Length: 185
Image (tube, rainbow, N blue to C red; front, side, top):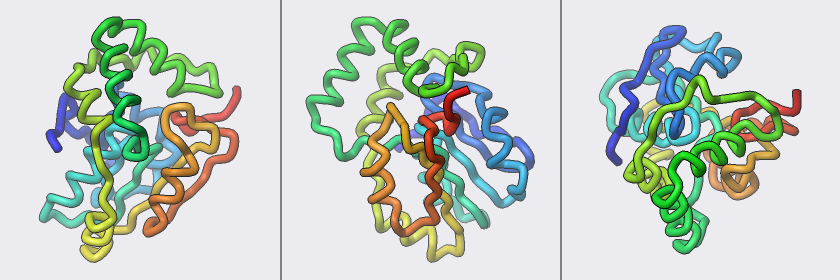
């Protein structure tokens, strides 16, 4: 997997990977980062895929990998992926605006100040990424603890399918929260 626009950033001494069409949104997850150390890697959504691959490939010590609402589309049919790419291509701005509304649901939090102009290639990478249990096992064998945080009302991914997949990890459900891990305000 190619690591796209995001050069990982340091926040609270952690390495953080941004979500799709987002930049500098890591401040929204301070509560998940405040007890992290300099051997922690964190990613949100699309960034969770990138963080996962980074930890899998690195030779550096990583004690904890935190996956915040990991983008999980491998159970979707290919027609879903083709449709998403088509909608993006034919109306990129409208697609991203609707996407950001779905990310923040059920809250009314506005993500516009964190907006990044993503590409069709990045969306394709996001939608076609396949999480592999063997890679989870390899990361765990390195001594890295993996924590996954999922919102029970996520409109981006299918919560129940993601929860069923990440059984090898420590997985937390945030009840009433969406993809942004926030509930109604």
